[in-house]
Length: 68
Image (tube, rainbow, N blue to C red; front, side, top):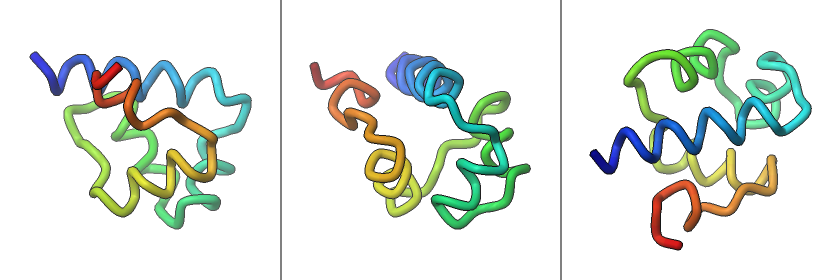
């Protein structure tokens, strides 16, 4: 259940950040295919990648993780 909430919130934030998949990938140092997997599959970013996502895209990690 928690992973579903995290996935949903992460996907929502990635869609609403105003950047393309390629731009997001470049900012966090992964392939565009990996970003697509974060959006469309059960694949979750590694902790360091998640931290980069939050920093680069100004995301609230507590919200995405369901801590708020």
